[in-house]
Image (cartoon, rainbow, N blue to C red; front, top):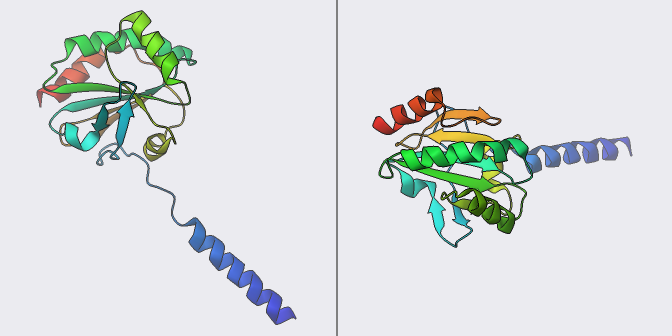
Length: 168
């Protein structure tokens, strides 16, 4: 009986170790950004792979998040300023309703797309810890910057950083 219990415990431990496997890799600054393909609230499909050659600004947000709401006007200012042939701004809605996001952005006159991540797979791939979080991906698809929390994106220092990546 003792031998049976030991064998059973060993089998269970081996099963748990192999079933759990390795956790999915998280986005790491200096490494290629995790790929994603998501659909926006207008039905357009966006694929990170198709945006190579442009700096991609990826912002995870929600309408119920005060810092997210506060940074949106400065994001629109950046979106208006940056050259469209070298820069694209994408927002990914996190745990929120697409209709709420569209209504809010229409109210403030924002023109950047809102992508839907229905099963939070992209959020998981990026290691999202909360909202807002923003990732700057260079023209080669490498994650260059990660910002946790709200940022005044049209402040001189932030603008200089974005212009620097777009000019490369």
